[in-house]
Image: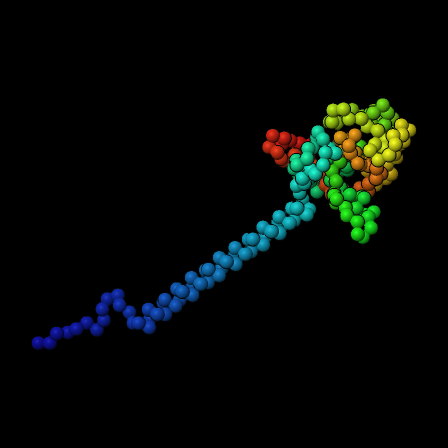
Length: 218
């Protein structure tokens, strides 16, 4: 009597087949890792581009460096500035805007410009005649109610830049804006450097973001 032995054992494959399966699985895992790394890199690039796009064309935060806008804005306050606001409407009197410092463009090559951009309030738009009377702002002959001014502030022409001249009138030409700080006694503004071109406007400051206790609209 002979004993018949099975020619194969259940579940056991040839060694070369097992190594091929392992190689295929390893290749798949490597491909998945490469795909995940590529997706992560693409996501990071997109995030950077979106952040850059938002900062360049949509909105940006600015830190207040001086007291020229007290008490509306204090040193260290952070404001959010919309760069799209004036794509849908004109600048209006009373708007708080960020704009390129006109004095930076008047400097010689080696001179230093402390602030490349400034933040002030618009007090005159195209065609306005702006003056001061008894410490009050006058636009087109009308005294302006300015409850936002720092207590004790008086509006004088030309302010902190030269000897006070009660008769001075600034006429705002087409395509220009006249700006002043809310801390009129201590603000170097349009009374010093004159009206600015509307093209110098970076955007409209519309929200105070920081500190938490001072969050609010402008």
